Length: 231
Image (cartoon, rainbow, N blue to C red; front, side, top):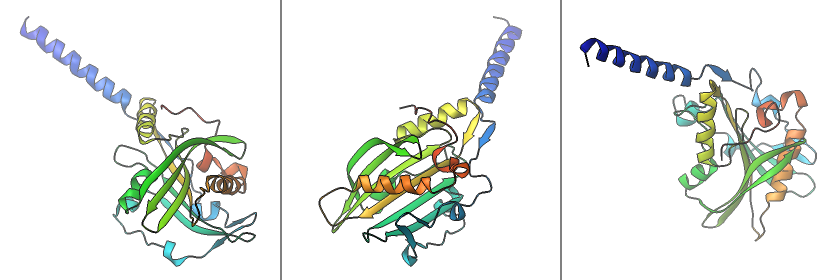
């Protein structure tokens, strides 16, 4: 093969690789929070539930920390049921850019990191404000403590239930030219009996979202019918 032809072939391969890289580079950002503020968006009181100040949940976010890097907004509250006295802890973490370096940390990773083992895990679909949201229920344990958790993650229009699905969804959206936003909505309670409280936690989250005006719910449950996750 002549030198000129080899150079043309190499140039063609380089151009093709550049074209593929350009095609795979996301070009559209999906940000459903916009100028809304989570503190104002999420109701402090709804039904029998009332937000109660808990200084242990107020943790300053240090500039440059992992939390500061991953999330644009982080909301933590304790809700008390006026009728039963039950206490539920709410955490909502929002990140406007979900990339390889910046993405939601799932409870299956966060709880073991603080010394709590995940001893039970269940995937299910939770009815929320007329939608069916793919969600996850967990039981986390440490000596003298058992915590029930129900959560879902929204990545753009998708609701991945596993870390693998989250990575796959992010890649598929990137191939469509989309950099998605992401939100993690988690409710948990510490129990002292032998029964799981997944149903109560699910009802709490459903009631919470239903108390948000319909025009503002998209950041929590997406703007349109749930798009199937990759797996």
